[in-house]
Image (cartoon, rainbow, N blue to C red; front, side, top):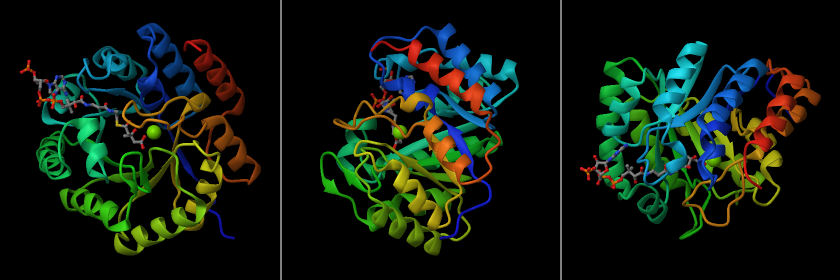
Length: 285
Ligand code: HMG
Ligand code: MG
């Protein structure tokens, strides 16, 4: 087996982890968590989401969080599903944005109230404005293996969204197993095909651990040449519109796994453990 010498871990806990928490986590607690994660050494952290505050109230403090991240001088990512969201993110000085479109129609409609076609058209406007402001653009494709509403998701469904992102000039694409139903064989095949069809695109693996396969899926993705992974501190998270799915893959466990395999990530394990304990302490069980 061949493994990369170095992997980038993108910490998504403050956004993808906390967005699913029913009880509002105080903004000060979110800031402390971000600070601890920055101290642990993550180069990029997804910290906020400029979605509609009525749809995801947990992310209503996005502008204040963004201001704090700017004070810390860190690179951070914020979700911007439409031009209104992007405008809010630009006003808040966000350096890296993320759009998200589902590979399956039903999920996309439930998640952002649009057909895939409408979302892709909206993304074209988001990309255009983001590029004018020289922002780094991440494109998420959600439900890339299976959908809780429609069942199996085909490669062609994923390719459709990826192709649009690539045409619009995306900087990286995060391939989401949003409901955690992928297995290593499917992951290997899907990422290998994506790398073949889009050789110049940076792909990121984004796994949820619903079936306990997320770590095996990371190994399979590395075999297919993937060198960037999203993970969430303390395995927090889930998507409010992905019923039955559990949290994102846990950052501490991914870091431990890769450390033991001698794959470099530049993460400080002690600081990470402290961040994980803190993350658990700020959410209601
Ligand atoms: P909508 O209701 O269809 O929006 O929501 P609209 O365009 O029809 O506008 C309705 C009203 O909302 C208008 O206000 C707009 O101005 C306002 P009014 O004129 O009635 O006063 N509006 C906004 N306000 C604040 N911020 C905005 C915004 N946009 C419109 N950005 C929308 C569409 C996309 C906003 C909504 O459906 C939404 O916020 N969805 C977010 C869903 C979400 O956050 N899901 C979780 C993240 S995705 C995920 O978790 C998967 C991922 O993590 C990958 C993985 O885990 O695998 C990425
Ligand atoms: Mg996720």
